[in-house]
Image (tube, rainbow, N blue to C red; front, side, top):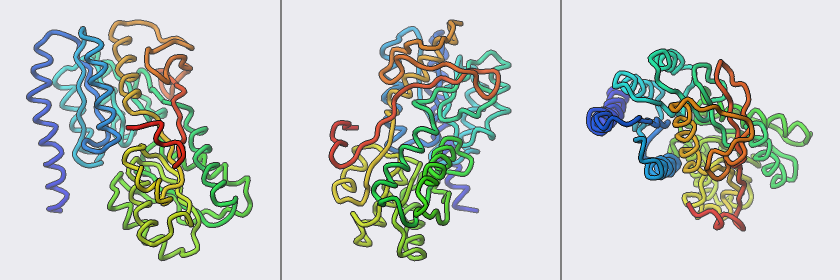
Amino acid sequence: MKTLSKKFLAGTAVAAAMLTGSIGTLLAQDKPVIATVVKISGIPWFDRMSTGVQAFAEANPDVVASQSGPATADSAQQLQIIQDLVAKGVSALAVVPMDPAVLEGTLKRAMERGIVVVTHEADNQINTQADVEAFDNADYGAALNERLAKCMNNEGKWTTFVGSLGSRTHMQWVGAGEENAKKYSGMQLVDPNNESFDDANGTYEKAKEILRKHPDIKGFQTSAGNDVLGVGRAIDEAGLSGKICLVGTGLPNPSADLLETGAITAIGFWDPQKAGMAMNAVAKLLIEKKELTDGMDLGVEGYNKVAVKKGAGEGLLIIGNGMVLADKATYKDYLF
């Protein structure tokens, strides 16, 4: 209990400093404030997204944009940050939910107060005006699995990792992977849906357990940005680089060394920088009460001709075309 309490206090202390300091200052400027809230601060994926929020702010001086998030991947900490932002009266929330269901009540109250709500990686979010996705999630999960199957020669044991069982997109990706693998009778799914909580060290330990339990395992499909790093490290240390296949979501720079050794077979991703810009662009349009239309250009690479559909609730689902798959031969084309 003491460890959990310290982690919670660390996360909320960071959030509180941001909320009482910068957000209070920003609100005093009498400009619309768009507050981006991510799953976890201080990891490469969301550090990259922060550069997008900053770029959006620089390109749009008529609004103020900021990013915050908990110190650990904890839905309760994220909820507290959002509740504080709602109390502060920001103009818009751009949220990447750790667990969409946990946020429903607070996001509903935010919208009732006139706060614009935009989400990302949460196409099942009911209380949002628009959920922005980089691509069709089923297509992405199937593409990861198809690359995995190719590496495995379409046969052998494989398993999956997700950031959490409550993470909508992660569950969609591994679910689509399972469906794709059904095409190959020789592929055998074992011990699926291991939760990593986006912790590379925890993922490393869990991957070692799986390697001990299934010494003949041939493949891993992973979801959270740090999963490929933890699983890849376990594969590499076991001397199995190039012998076990690993395909999952990850960024090129953090994955580079393990791609070079062959511990990671391939990574799938979209640019979090562009996703941050796209979320903020949609939030600004909604603040200005502008219409979101099918085929529109959000002014962000990968979101130049978005599909706009009905979302899970009363809001919209906005889908871009930002999916990328890269391996040892191509990852250097995407240096971030």
